[in-house]
Image 1: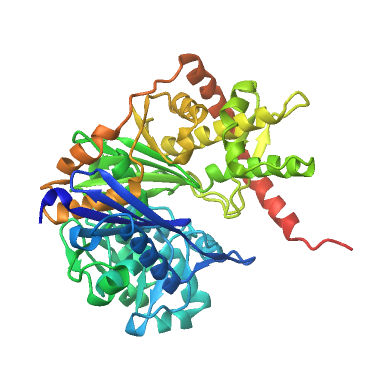
Image 2: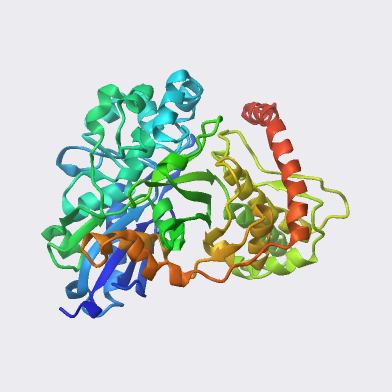
Length: 523
């Protein structure tokens, strides 16, 4: 077939949306289709998702892509899949689900995390994985299940992640990738499972649940006839298992280009902040937080800190505005309010209010772990209005970004950014000032799917190395550098000092508030 017509399908199964995106072999995006994701939350802290429904939604996204790309089946050179990280997707006999998946949002493992964290064994696990223990992770969730629901693990044969489950449905192969395997149960230096990490979690007897580790830049498996029929594709099409979505997004957005490592932040529902480094340059902090996640490049990893709530803070604030406007008989849409953010920001007074963006019910996980952490404004007075709250929330996201990079060492010399929120000039300006470094916006529309597709491009030989692929797929789409204003950077130095002083003083307050919230009211 004419290679100019060949495409690679990148699948990105996120928390909110499952996307199927077609790229040509040079990295140009041809078309995309998506299906809204579905998951359930419970008052007990649970966040669960149906495995069978997730596969059906993935199939629907691919079918939708087929409606947009002529002759998709015959033109598809390869498929690659990434997806939401952490979480636990249990599979049993006949590759059937063992209950619903526990998502990364699930907080039920908190008691087990508390009991394991801080011990000598947990520090040894951290030194192996480079990753702090939190409720999001499969390791913590399996350890908790083993304590409170051992029968669930007794019925399971393999513990997968979201993308691994989809790969199983595509190929019939139970496997995971080096990134999720090493940051949860392994050694980031070797990209293999670590007995030390597994034992620290108390899971040695459950070792058989961990699947084979394969690298999707070197190994593919053929699309099964059953999956091909469901998706409208051709059987035996090569399928590549991508790395976890965080690093696929960063790879597609420019965490490495020109053969050089860089920093990349995704400002989405959560804030994901990554620095590509050689293994020897990894800085493991005293607090034992963050992640070290392999990149599909030899001897190269990303050091990662993720703050639990990013744009959901803005969504919360805009929902308050929408509620009040509806009460006043002037209903408005979320999109209309988003369009006003930069104007409100420009109308506000800079520097007088600090906001900590811990709005998630799960608390915070980066650069510190505290399930009781909650959001708050500091410095309010009667002269402040709604625009000042908008500015404080936007600047709070920039301060949280700086807080995360500070836990990894020095500030980056340049920051590449992606995510829907970075269309805001106010947020970009705040990020540049907070980091005090130039920022470059990736013009890549679907960075996660692109990162996965890049792995398939290397796997099928379209490129000999990932850096060669990056030169075509990533570097040309990096925007011009936006430099910080010196006066703004100086103001953010002061704000950051206040920001860190306040958040370090708050844990005892959060604990007291959690106790108060749990106290039954007196009627």
